[in-house]
Length: 425
Ligand SMILES: [Zn+2]
Image (cartoon, rainbow, N blue to C red; front, side, top):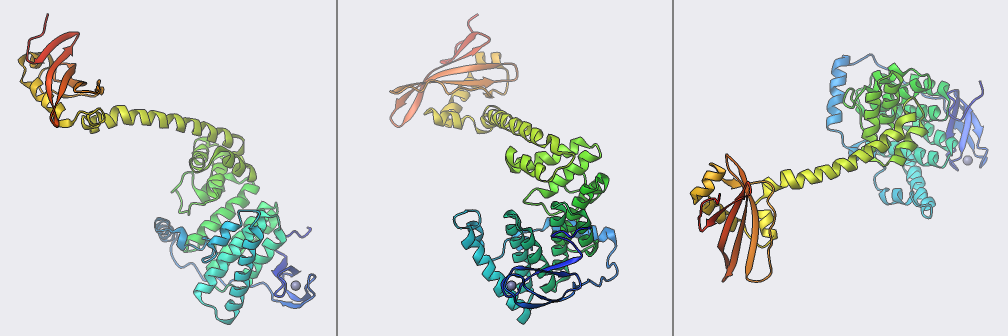
């Protein structure tokens, strides 16, 4: 078979002098950089010597779930390299992109030297983050040979086995995304299939799922990623890869309900165009309905928002908040409304009409707060037997208002209760 840019049979690292990709056989050897001519000795690819399984699978999964619970992006290996935040932002703008990338390049060179002189856990972590970020940057600009070289250089230099496995998973992922399933499978064969660290486990699940997608092995995808979030321990992916792959796996085994569930979760975080792009960039059984599902979800969400807002105002807000909200907004106050209720309860004709436990009711309207010395208010009331509407007038008297007249309408009949008069038949 022809060698591809991610071929496992080749070794591709960066020239230590100029950074250009240098290609040798997997066994390495002496070579001169085709870009700057520097003579290089490329080492043979390192093979991990795995120890026997350390914990039972059940305990391992429980441990991974616990790590998901306490997972923090800022502390994870997947965060952007520390100290380069402002340059990361520059990468998004075409005008400042090259300057931003130059900062990454310099940090990469500096850390690479430090790694060979004095290898500390902090240096390892920074170098691994740089490698993952730079691979993404190269990938965005379509430079797959640079993606390959930066990742395999990191694979050569990193000493932490977990980091090396993450790099291998990324090499597999890029190989699979470029259509090279053979290379993807080969890179994954070197990865510990039962890691203890959640970041490695998640990377492995995602990359292996991508391999299964290329082989249309959907039930294995569901096994790896679960049908729903939380089925398996998995770090949520900012790029939605987990949701996209899970939906393809579910759709592939005919579980359309859960396939749509994953699409909806993505639609909660992104707009419809993004969901369409994501599902088209990694095509699979759910691609045909991803955009439609997301767009329907958005319409329902905006409808639900209106309904929720309506309910909040008329059902939740009103009984919880009242009567203060209404009355404060129209110039009355709670104590005044309470005073009206007290007078209402004292009136036998009102008690006869409404029953016991007379109180303020849902559906009150603000009434007609007029400018000037006189104010008219309307308030809904209810008792055990019936509901009614109270209208009352208040007059400004110094700093307070006094109630001058109040009557209640029940079933089209009027009860005057300031002063109290019986219902007119
Ligand atoms: Zn060179």
